[in-house]
Amino acid sequence: MSNKYDVVVIGAGPAGYVAAIRCAQLGFKTACVEKWRDDKGNAVYGGTCLNVGCIPSKALLDSSHKYVEARKDFATHGISTGDVTIDVPAMIARKAKIVGQLTQGVKSLFSANKVEGIAGFGKLLPGKRVQVTKQDGSTEEISADNIILAAGSVPINIPPTPIDNETIVDSTGALEFSSVPKRLGVIGAGVIGLELGSVWSRLGAEVTVLEAMEAFLPAVDTQIAKEAQKILTKQGLNIKLGAKVTGSKINKGKTKSVTVSYTDANGPQEATFDKLIVAVGRRPLTENLLDPAAGVELDKRGFVIVNDSCATAVPGVYAAGDIVRGPMLAHKGMEEGVMVAERIAGKKTQVNYSLVPFVIYTHPEIAWVGKTEQQLQQEGREYNVGTFPFSINGRAMAANDTEGMVKILADAKTDRVLGCHIIGPSAADLVQQMVIAMEFSASAEDVGLTMFSHPALSEAIHEAALAANGHAVHMVNKRKR
Ligand code: FAD
Ligand code: AMP
Image 1 (cartoon, helix red, strand yellow):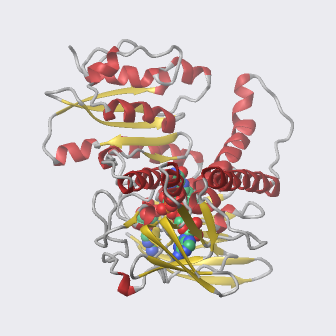
Image 2: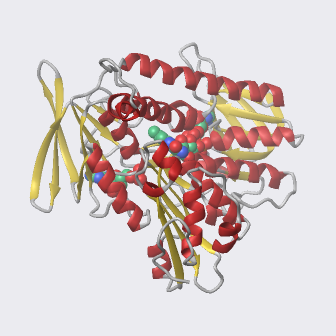
Image 3: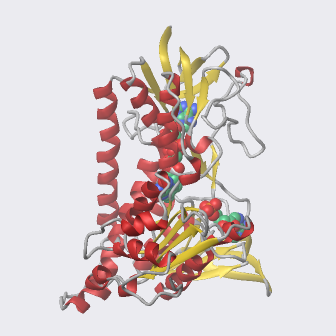
């Protein structure tokens, strides 16, 4: 059987489902092939993000944060509670419900927009044909004028710590613990390791994070990274830097545990944990995705090679999301999905890769956009810095959530904002204000001249922008003007 479409998308994660919906909105006959199934064999849309990534991790981060607030913060507000306990299965069930609502939501959007969802494994064949392998092993062939590859990514496994999904888990397994482990090891102090480590630490686990690199969060502005390390350590995360994991041994007693070998500055070390999360990064998923004769090339790290507008070297074949270069972030993939759809429609849409916002959903959150101070120094650029701490922001004080700061970097000559770095309450939402400002090439003065509601956390942005030019009002300026 041969079915012909205008566009076929392989993968229904944020890059693929957004591309498919936008293609359909633009009037293309669109199909989206997805291999993810539920227990009943029905296709599940939403990819890593909705099923085992952004959403479930944030659901557990929010639940565990509320637990900490109830135990440690309510009394400050004069609220007394009895014994605060945690029902882990109930917390996991709440997470599953949210995931179900959102994945179902994508299904509804597909039908409302007339995207044809096809359950099966897609493989790109030459001539813009796609072979779909069904659950029962049968195959079907479809073809399209345009193909969008959006197969996403999977966790990286490392030989010293093979995943057994019982004692040693990856990020997916770490979203499903049925009880709080007493001793939890996390390999990797990246975004996922810190978020998942925080969840279980808040619920009472003794968490040790083993990180091979000497620097903590090297991609983050150093001032913010130092503040983050201080705060997370105070919260109970035992972060060991320069600790490279080299092996592991499962101990089979009444309850299983794992002894991890690692080397640090003092030589070989060992540590024993009840559970171990391996969070050492993700890799693009391209196994069996491409018939070599289809002509789509991969780079040395396995990413599909594309240009700035996500086109491969094969005319009419595009790739978007985690499967291509750039940060592995849902919103980056979604914007690429829109760009590809609109380019197929002949528009000149272009993703602005210099303004991708980054967020680490610890508490306080860490969020940034644009250049760090270290990058500007390396580039030899002259810049002004304005910072403002949440400890003197009225709204943060009212909420008893005063850790962290906003930092704004502006060009010394033109005053154009070059970067914004935040550690603090709601940093993910706050940084977005500066993403918009920077998209419109705002200067620090422009932000300073903008009226901000009072009292609001955003006022810290306002004051940091004013401080970049030496005239913050609600603190003593370091820089005089
Ligand atoms: P994916 O979401 O991986 O989707 C790809 C889809 O393609 C999958 O559904 C897969 O089943 C399907 N597929 C693959 N191969 C085939 C094939 N051959 N045929 C048919 N279907 C196929 N990002 C953020 O921006 N914010 C966050 O807070 C955040 N938190 C995260 C937390 C965790 C624990 C993890 C693991 C990730 C997190 N991410 C976060 C990253 C985010 O999930 C990814 O960047 C995003 O999902 C990538 O989208 P994608 O569409 O490229 O790929
Ligand atoms: P990210 O890529 O941001 O998810 O972070 C993954 C982290 O895991 C990186 O900071 C790596 O340095 C770290 N990492 C990778 N392999 C090991 C290892 N064998 N031992 C300890 N840390 C590791």
